[in-house]
Length: 65
Length: 278
Image (cartoon, rainbow over all chains, first blue to last red; front, top):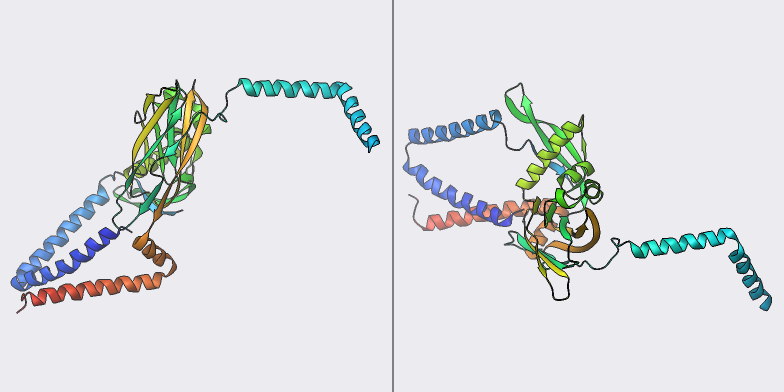
């Protein structure tokens, strides 16, 4: 486990949640819906590309010793 | 007592007289002379020392460097191989489903495979070492490909394809490497040559023992070899947490949740005190 990465993830998510809460209060409901829809769309496009384009590596780790 | 000694001498005098014994004696003499005349891998000219042989993995560890140096005979080429113990690895195999989507379609098992494999040489391996010698000492990717067993692989072509993918994956993870020209050599006043190589040690290399083998090569044959060891060990907090994750997984899980909750409450309190709420 990369502990520095874990600490950064912890700090980023906790501080990010607070920042998000502050911005969430300032934005209107429709604006929030559009923002959320955009995020879902971007993730969908990424997944579609990953599934259809030939991956650079044809194998990935599953286990072993 | 004297009778016993006499019988002993008589026995060996008879033996000395026999043709079989003399034949065996001549054979032994010829074998001993051949051993002296042929320089073999047992010669102790080549030395190897890994200068950073104990790498400690602490909280801020992000890889290290390892240097190997030593002395060798002049006029030889050198190969430095760093490997982890061999084991078996299971990999997910990707393939096209329905002729359109790339998905995991099965598993591949790799036997006799080191998790870490790096080979450095003074010149191109193909130019300095014969193929049978490379296969004997498992030096270079083609030799490793012959050494590794992959299942399922229908034929040699398929095996070669998946081995190449495996090497690509490992090189991407910085745990496999093969290059020439990184070893520097300098002449010493005593007529020997000193060699030196400095290589990056990736943080992806798991804790454990690694074997550094240096081969002296002449006339396409390995003439000598020397070994050194590199040990990678977790220390301090990292070791405690890694051991806890293995031995008390449930406690480790609850501790992680506790830390995450504590961090959330702490940051929440800071933001509340900051006056952001209304």
